[in-house]
Length: 407
Image (cartoon, rainbow, N blue to C red):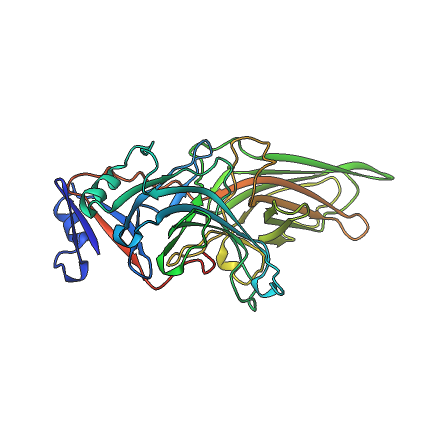
């Protein structure tokens, strides 16, 4: 289904019965811009939610608001009220282990507001999309805007094992609209709309300093020391991009370096637990080319590593970006903070590091160097402004489905 904005009105038509496709319209006129609108209807058809986007971007310094329009049958509401909420659902244990009333899920209500009847005049400015939808959908359409708190965590899904069933661990967001007497009422499934959204971050436009580190190791009762220098080509990488690590080994000791191993590790920190940190190797390369490195000699080489989900699909515990139906999964992006002290953060923090190890044998041990890196999605190109001849494609969800059974 598509919505076409013409002049002051909004025209809705079904793309299946429309002879001209959106691509043809774009080729015919460069002034036409396409916009996607997400729509979901309650099972009884009395509440309908229109949302301009499901990805809420965190710019580190500020978070984009969640804005849209809800249409409600006021005759069905009668003396009841229409409420809107943003729910952050954090599952930290397997669903199949929940027995005897035990629950491994916490729900945080980050935003809650009474949409109808309005208690006071809205204190936000309408977006262009909201204005056009309100004109088209009539007097039973009501705008809404939710603002997430600054420390709201990113959407993360933990990859389950092959034999695990049930909802995966991780953190999800839901936009919930329901009819009730109070905002704390238990909502009825038939008059509730729950639409999954996700909070995302994109790679910064400016990259930091080129990562570089030098580590040294001396040996008891042995003269000299072993030096390892690792330099990366840059600090910020995009998902699927190759990481180049320049390795330089200077052996001023009397030990031999037998092999070299380079790896990219993903660090996951579950903030709910004191000991909820673990690391997983998502890309590695082991080589003995140029080895053994004899005492008094040196070696320099460049190794390439490509961290991607395709080679880790069967590895349990890897953090993935929050998933939305119909989109491909990928490794979770690095978590960025506006300041260093994040004691009150809730959720899951993801980080990446490149680690290089020199193996010297069973008696001499090993020497390791580590550099943190940022792996994220590139910031998408800016969406054109909504104009009078713009068209919006509507993605409609089934009326008999709901994203969260417990809501």
